[in-house]
Length: 354
Image (tube, rainbow, N blue to C red):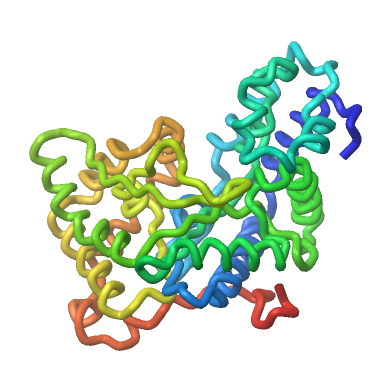
């Protein structure tokens, strides 16, 4: 990316790319998103100390446990993209100095907060993290053996780099350019080229950590329903930024569990426990009550997203589906205990396909 690009040019590029992906053909977009998920799971399966994976956020909140469903256009995302351009309008003719600065200094940064956040040369509304936060990405989590986080970090980071699947702030300007090319391909009805992945938001948690959170979901939701307090179970993973680090703020696992928690390859016992909890919650609370608990546990941005009528409709239908699982699915059905396969054509099956 050329160093003399203006703030107006780069913010419009980000807005146009993200909105174009949002508005692209649903089936092609879905096939591409599932291909990204399949690729991450293939890569994660090579981590010696890995046990399973799960996804949260986009696009999982629009899909069922088998990744079936339609991914609707989300007006909130389009509004969010346009806000970036509006917030930087008065700086649009200024040169975007971050391109040159990142080229000179990025190797010495721990992350984009170290130098970028206090820098006076670019307005806060146009800092690199503001731009990359508008890019579509996929949140994927690796569950590793207890006490093996360091090994998992080392192996997963090396594998993601090997296959060119990176978090957006590992190479911000490259991420923006890649998303632009992905958007152009989808807009023209083409599947993006091999290796052209969306930014990945990768996290690692230990098995006992996620198991404890899952077991705690029913009691926390019951407590919230009785007291009116926000249902909250903090999950504080190590996440891949430029280097692995713990974020400043924990995520709320209650929100993730209700909205999007989608597992891949979980051990049978824990997989059945998850199904059992979902079944029990759907019979303890009406779908609208679960929606209210979801909204209580959501951030402001996620709350606005779930106020979209189509997203709310998908959520309520998902809650109904939780209550319609056959009883034998929760206990004796071997079919239900199998890891969920990603039903995607063109997905990677070998290293050469990544």
